[in-house]
Structures are given as C-alpha cells and as structure tokens.
Amino acid sequence: MLPKSRIVNLPVYQPGKPAEEVRKELGLEEVIKLASNENPYGCSPRARAAIEAEFANITQYPDGSSAELTEVLAEHLGVKREQIIFGCGSDEVIALICRAFLLPGDETVMADQTFSVYDTNSQIEGATIIEVPLQGGTHDLEGMLAKVGEKTKIVWICNPNNPTGTIVSDNALRSFLDRVPDHVLVVIDEAYAEYVIDETYTNGISLLSKYPNVIVLRTFSKIYGLASLRIGYGVGQPEVIQLINRVREPFNTSRFGQAAAKASIADQKFVKECREKNAEGIQYLSAEFDRLGLDYFPAHGNFMMVKVNQPGGEVFQAIMKLGIIVRSGFGKYPDYIRVTVGTKEQNVKFIAALEQVLNKDQVQV
Picture 1 (tube, helix red, strand yellow):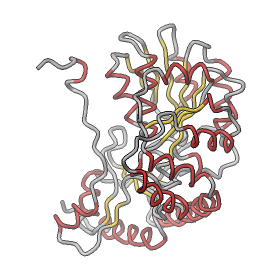
Picture 2 (spheres, rainbow, N blue to C red):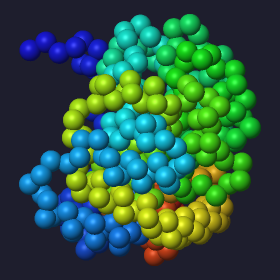
Picture 3 (tube, rainbow, N blue to C red):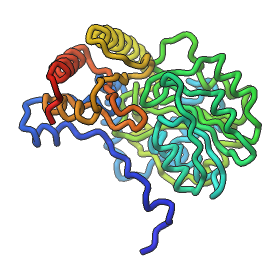
C-alpha cells in the first residue's frame, strides 16, 4: 500500500487520557480529568431532554442540512441561514476548509503554538505551513501579516488561543483584517468565545459584515457541554459557506447532536452560569499559582497554562499518579502544563496535587 507521502510522518492526534483507564491502571478510587477542556458542569437539562426524545427516531437518518438547527442558530447569532455550516465538531469544519481551498504549494499562516488541527489538515492537502512565534503566549498579528504573500490562501487565528488561553484585542484584530489582502481567507477559531468576559475581546460574528474574507468557527463541545455529540459550526459569507459545503459529506452531524444543540441555544441561562463559575475558577487558580510563585498565561477560555519550572511531561505523570489528569507536551513550552478549569472541588484537589508534586526535590516518575 502506498499512502500519500506527505501523511507518512504526520503525528497522530493524542487526546487526553480517559479517566476510567487511568483509574484502573493505577488502582485509584477517583480520577479527575482536567485535560480536554470539557465542561465540568455537564450540559443544559434541556439538551439532555432533547437527546432522550430523539431515541424514538434512532433508526432515521439525520437532517442532512440541519435545517431546524440552522434556523435557530441563525436567529441567535443574527445572521442568515446561508452563512452557517455544521460539522462533526469544529475540527471537521477546519478539515473542510482545507479541502475546499488548499492546493499543494499554497501557503497557510498560523501561530507556532496553537490548535494542531490547522497544521495537520493543511499538510494533508500539501500546503506549506508558515508558523509565526507567539509573543507572550499571544498571536503576533503584525508578524503574521508580514508573512502573508501571493501564495497565502489561509490565515488561522485561534481566539482564545489553545493551548495558551490568550486573546487578541478587538483593535488589534480589526487593524490586522484591514490590511490582509482580499484573496486570503482568515479563519477565526472561537471555540471558547462564550467563556470570555474581557471587554476588549471581539465577537467575531460582528466582523463578518465588514470583512467578507473572514469565517468564524464555534462549537457546542465546550461551554454547551456536548463534546461527545461532536457538533461545531462555521459562520461566513454565503458564497464562502457554499464552497465549503461542496466538499462536506452528507449526514455529517447526528440527530442527537442537532437536537441537543438546538435545545442548548434556548438555555442561555445555563451558559451564563457556566461562564460565571469558570471566571471564579480562573480567579482561584490564578491566586494559587501566584501563591506558589508560578508564572502563567492570562486565561480567557476554560483552561490555564502554567509554567511548572520542571519538564511538563514529568509533572503530568506525577500528578496523574495522584488522580489528576492534565495536559503536557507543548513543544514550544516544555516546562508548562495545561489544566482545565474544573469545579471548585476539582480545582482545590488539583492545586493540592500540584503543590505536593512541586514540593518534592525532584519529580518522581
């Protein structure tokens, strides 16, 4: 068998370790997973009820156009139905964008420490990856603009950025977009947008009327708590969405996902409560990191990236033995770990485990 030569050395995406697997391996009574930025408060009760109602239709294909969900979401966002495309998580929308626009030899610009799916899917299509180093954990928009040329097809901006959790301001983003050539598609990934409380943050949807070369990505996996149902979406100009739809597989979202997402939109009270609890968690973790003398990036999503001053992989292993799963392995930041903001109880247990590990003369692995 002869695969595409450009995929042979691609790294396989490594998801966070399942809590139950770790619990069995280590013989622990409890394991708390704070690795994948899932919502520790679950999903809206309305979403749960919608999922249960869909069991009656389990033998039927989903609506291939997600018509009802599209109508509800369009009204919620204040856009036209033709501006929305759904995917099996926003990951699939990223893959579809690459499939629709990138050819071998095209260039695509992104940060050097950001969501890895941009890089992977661009490589699959044979594009040349141009990475621009983060500045203080934040996208260097001026540096990225300097790398945009005639061969550039797509620029990726993760806002808030995963894994650092930082944001670019409204002013900086608009200044950048004012100078990006019209032929370049700018993808603004806002998977964690609903968590942001900073007043300088841009709601990317508001940019679409002025910048026709922008597409905004969002998901129901994070604050809405529907990660297992894999449903995300992109919002852009109708002509851009139409092109991406041409390479979308039919029935790419499930009946359960569509029903749950539709019900979730109607429960913004749940979203607000999760946002407020998350902000309290960030405040607590920030204070504890300060107490421990640890540097960290300002957090705007539902996770924090903290410098542990030791190899992050070793700290990850040591904390996992104490029943807490976090994330490590960030190439540009080898002495950092990323932790999901959990419930108050989970955050307290994480800090206790981290402090126990860091107080040892040397991390035991």
